Length: 160
Ligand code: HEC
Image (cartoon, rainbow, N blue to C red):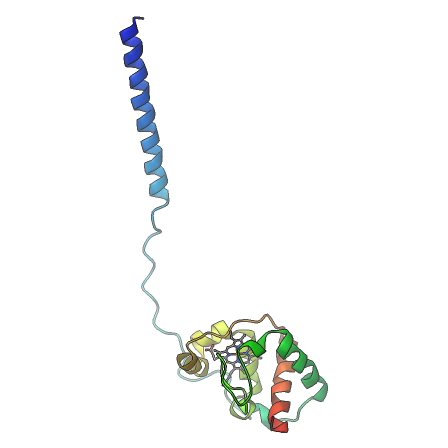
């Protein structure tokens, strides 16, 4: 093999390698290309009427004192104080008299599934429009949510 042929072969290899590289790049960019267009956003699923707003208001039932005491601790421990106060608005609604406005079950749902409520419940949706903030899920269990509701009831009964 003469020197010229070797040089030609070498450059052919370089070109081939170059092509290979390019092909790989193209492959990569193809697989990284955006997923097929997302379906058009579904129409708002906020219900015309809340599923949890029927019946007596939470404040109409007696307070379970032991549960309220546990709920008071949870209210701080679970970070509710970051966004809620009484007699004042923080980033979230003023909770004074909330138990005279809402049913216990509505508040339990708001505490346990605020993300779902904001998308489906007309009351949560209207609050969201005012506060422009979605309440975060603070990871309470169902019984913890009930205890917190007892605490909210106690505050309203005590007029605090
Ligand atoms: C990041 C701020 C934030 C935290 C933390 C938070 N909330 Fe909320 N909360 C909101 C906002 C904002 C709303 C209004 C609904 C919405 O926009 O999602 C709300 C709504 C509520 C309501 C209904 C108020 C009404 O007027 O009907 C209750 C009750 C409530 N929160 C209780 C709690 C409890 C209990 C905790 C702790 C477990 C908690 N929140 C933690 C921001 C927060």
